[in-house]
Image (cartoon, rainbow, N blue to C red; front, side, top):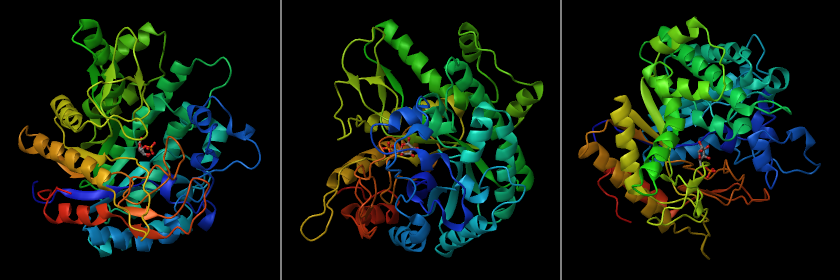
Length: 473
Ligand code: BGP
């Protein structure tokens, strides 16, 4: 890979930080998302978290307590040779209710120390501003991103952190997996539906608010420091037609566009014509000012970041077996094996996805999530021999390198997801692990939180040291 390629790892506050009531932090959306069968309805916004029974387990509240372990975790990242580390700020740690005029000093100091610790090891911070969390205060009072007021609160928060970290953070990502808003609106954007509400209308209006806020953040970032690099973030994974039947091909194009829509706006600066027609056809009228349109046009992102876990597949007739995958429903692809959680494993699909995104946008790509969620069982000596994870990551890194070296795609970095074990976003489980570092904690929340290097830890250290050349297990 090219010199300076950003090898690293990725996490997010909502799934690893914990410390939900430490240092004056306010309550966040993630603190009210339960483990268990109510998780999906709450994340979808169809069940009100205030109706959850007593005794509910909220795994995000403690998570893996990176709040109390960050020095140890960062030292382990440094030992693997990380060049960068992608993580997110917890918005409600900085603005507890979202509405304060001044930030919470304790919260800012926490990230000060955190970032200084990274810089001590020459690890480049890559900060996601909003990764599945929003202050619950803004959800309660304004309905979160349904409401245009959110833009102002978000920018107030951006301004504080852009100025404060002006000389220490260069890479920023506005909204994690912005397209998740369509699938898990409460988790993705704090949106709950009222009876009788037109859900599609609400979601696209909220999307417009996020898209506008993102463009305004790009503008502000560049004013504060012209060297800032600001990216958008897509839950990516190309959609294959199930067959060469033109109906399947057409369906796959439509499905891809549901996701591309967001990046088309953030990277090309305007609503694409297919989206305008779609919204019109659905009877959706967005409140959008001319000023919004100008902002979108003039402040597109510097790079496109993405998560890739699996490709998707679609049949126009809706028949056949369904498949799992990173949130979106998909048809089962008979050519692919699946993970223990039923997510297809498709390294070639990674190469295809990278090519498709680069063809479409011609902007640098940053792979900020990729990985295999699997059960890890320590052996009698406490070792974790996660060869399955090494296989998955090796094949995906190989595919990414082919995209770069053979196809000419510009990829600037690679940060596998959950480099230290953390809470799964979709299931709330601890047992769905992604890390190079094992954390002793189970699905019920029991465990010492002790960190243990897995076999993949040493493997990844070698990958980074060899700049991707040494991939075999
Ligand atoms: C992405 C999210 C991450 C992460 C990952 C893996 O959608 O950005 O937050 O959780 O998926 O998903 P899961 O945790 O459900 O296995």
